Length: 227
Image 1 (cartoon, rainbow, N blue to C red):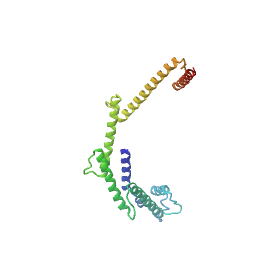
Image 2: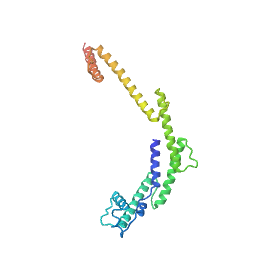
Image 3: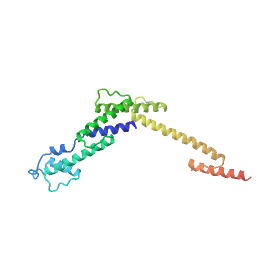
Image 4: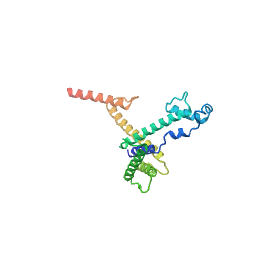
């Protein structure tokens, strides 16, 4: 759960640093006077692809017109993402500019990160949000490895030189082996009971044999009750 919450904080923080598509649109070369000559130019192609991604119709439009629409679409998308991040953090967006929201979101993310750091025993002194995220990620990874090692020790699995992935694979195999042993023990007990009742187990599953045992016992009990 803590790992999922940290992932959410990281995602919200990333939104603060995102750059609207306006920057891309402003850097694309060409205008109405050169649109004809730049039809095959790579930058023109990028402009058209970007417009298509935003669902903007480019037929009959100049580069300048397309860039203007891209800028508007990019700004709207950026604002939408900021508002979503603000809502997730409980920040009001009323009457605030994008820059104000970014500042408040950054501060809120910092508070959340410090809370997680306290829970994990990670020192946040002098760390930026980015540095603290990295520290928390490393702490969570270390905690996960420690938990795996504890499970491996409990299962009697040697960990020497094994990676986390290898330990998980070994734990899974041990769990399956334990399940198989339990099933084998159950089957053995059921087969012994069937033998006592004169029930054949050839070609039958444990469940089928168990069902026949139940039927035989019910019939036996009913017969005894009738006497």
